Picture: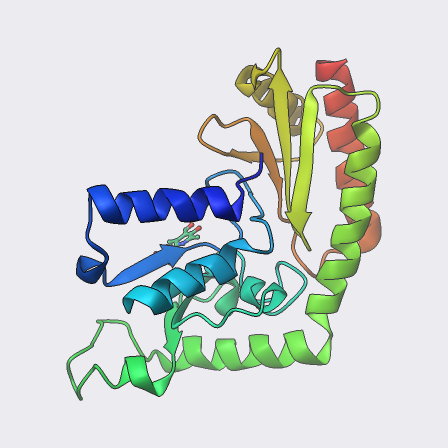
Length: 248
Ligand SMILES: Cc1ncc(COP(=O)(O)O)c(C=O)c1O
């Protein structure tokens, strides 16, 4: 499943012409790699196209990196795979690696829109959670976690692409770093039931899988970035066995 940037650009311009005038749009929010929607990696021209349209109309470009940020895709942020600089980046999840914290990150031009005391949250500025963030960034940098995600992701993709040779229902293997989606199709339709069966089979063997996509026909692989390699391969062995049993 791919979406061409020229198609998306034409759709946006149509939306501006028929539904929502661009001067009424404050921001375009986008996941640089789509998460719940099916682990979709856009073509390299997609983010530059959005940047151009946002600049043309004075719209803020917001990158939601809650899933894709903090080394997941093999770089610190998924936008680092593009030359695009968003106006705002939203981060959470791996930001605190288990400690409850989320943040929006932006340059002075955007942040100066807030005046002192205007933007508060009940649990904002929690010192312990902030200390966890400092430790996460320090560890990720010191232990070269983005590079590890890139290397292990390549290994997972190679194994998964090998399965496609004799499992035709495995229609697409896609991803960036350790954010990988396996899309299942049967007879031209999303194979939701097959994904359910594979998940149940894998669970009985000790591996918990999570699907995504609007038809829940994509198995997402987002192992911990610190996973020992033998454990990663043991998990993939189980997934492969479950797939071969259910999809053969
Ligand atoms: C891409 C993305 N953005 C935002 C959220 C919501 O994050 P939060 O629970 O911090 O509000 C999620 C949650 O899964 C997500 O995957």
